[in-house]
Length: 322
Image 1 (tube, one colour):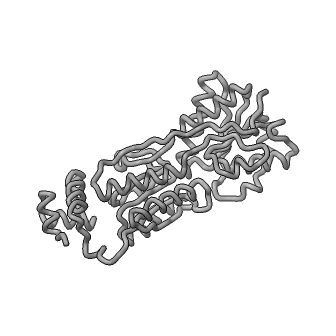
Image 2 (cartoon, rainbow, N blue to C red):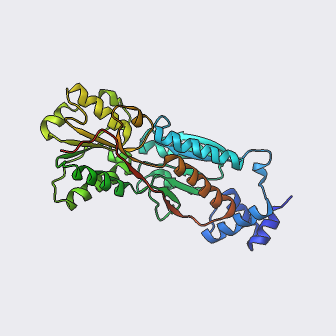
Image 3 (cartoon, one colour):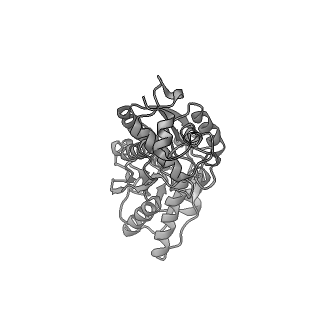
C-alpha cells in the first residue's frame, strides 16, 4: 500500500505539503495541488480517513423537483456509480442565502469534489470558501472556478427571439423567474435584448416572478392588458406551461391569439397539444460531462476546463406566423 511519504517524494514536495493538499487543510499552489493529486492517483494512495469508506462527491442544485436538474443529477449519479463514488445532494431552492450553508453541509463529508449550480457565481457566498476540485454546472466559469459545463444561454435567447421575429412578431414579452435567482434566465433575457436590437425593435421590460411558487396560479390579466404582446418567451419550460394555462384562463388561445416559447426541452413539453416550441438543452449529457470533468480533475490532476454543450431549437406548435 502506498504511503504519504511516497506520494510526497513523487510529487517533489514535503510531507507536510502533501498532507495539506490531500486533506485540504492548508495553502498550496495550484501547480503543487495538481502534482500531489497526480502522484496519489498514480500510486493508488488513499488517506486514512478514506480507508474502508466509499468516496463521495457533493452536488448542489437549485431544485430537485425541476426536471432540468433532476435529469442532470441522474446522469451525474450514473457516471459516479461507474467510478465507485457516492453522490451527496443539496438544494438551494433558488435562494442565494442558502447556498453557503448547503455547500458547508456537503463539505462535512469531505467529498472528492463538488458539482455546483448556483444562482449567480459572481456573487455566490458559497464560492468564497476554499473548496475541493469544483465544477460549475449551468453557470459560466469564474476566475477562481474555471471548470464549468454550460450551454450558451445568451445565444439561445437570441435564437428563439430571432425565430419569433421571423414569424412576424414585434411585441414580444420575456417572462422570467427572478434574475437574482438565476444567471441563466438573465443571460437568456440579454439574448432577447440582442435580437430585438438587431432587428430595430423596441424590447418590453421583462416581467419577473418567483421561481418557487405555483405556476398553475399565474395571473397574466394585467400584463396582457398593459403590454398586449403577440408572443411570450418564458425563461423555462415549466413557466411556459404556466403561461399557457394563464392565457387559457383569460380566454386566449395558444397559438391562435398569443404564441408561447420556452427553454429547456423537458419531456412534458412534447406531450401537450400542441407541443411546446422551446430551446432544448442537453441536460443529461451536461451532467455526465460535469461528472467526468470533476473525476478527471480530482483523480488525474487534469487542468480545469470550460466545456460548452450545444442546444437546439425545437419548433413545436405553440408559435404561429402573423
